[in-house]
Length: 202
Image 1 (cartoon, rainbow, N blue to C red):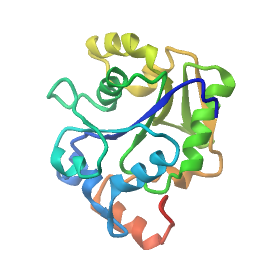
Image 2 (image 1 turned 180 degrees about the horizontal axis):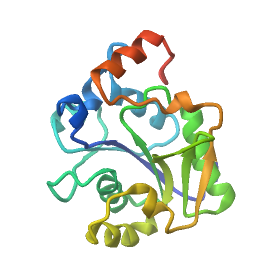
Image 3 (image 1 turned 120 degrees about the vertical axis):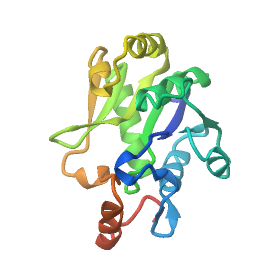
Image 4 (image 1 turned 45 degrees about the vertical axis):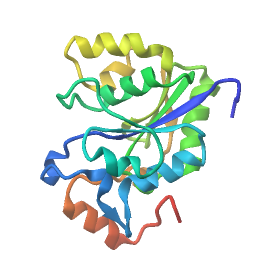
């Protein structure tokens, strides 16, 4: 990794999880541990500075001993709102973004995402599984924060649209689509556990 650029990380745990009856996904147990703990473990192996973006149960998230950030509005404006808050909170040049509900992603995958942006000298790198983008897995320059603020102020929310406004490259994870299995329902949580797939902490 190019250490001349300081990189920080943010784990997105601030959504409402409407499809899970508004439960806080990051705090749900997967293989006996909170989902967010897998993202924390993977990110902490790559970065010295990790933040958690959360809008509920803040004291529980603070128990993981990393800074907890809340959106600057109370309207749950989606993942980009959490990204913007993190960009404003860090002094790093680059921000690594990952969600709280993909427990199979490892430190090696996060390094690949970071290095893809470096190798292409791009504004943003986004995870790509060979068929589709996974736009909540990003490595992006923090000097894009003014662009992101303007985008959100215009009422737009779609991550994929905003990243395409910049020099964005794909971090290729072809053949590894299972990495990006995320939890959107209790049934999906049970199904993932029943598969017995190894998590990032194994």
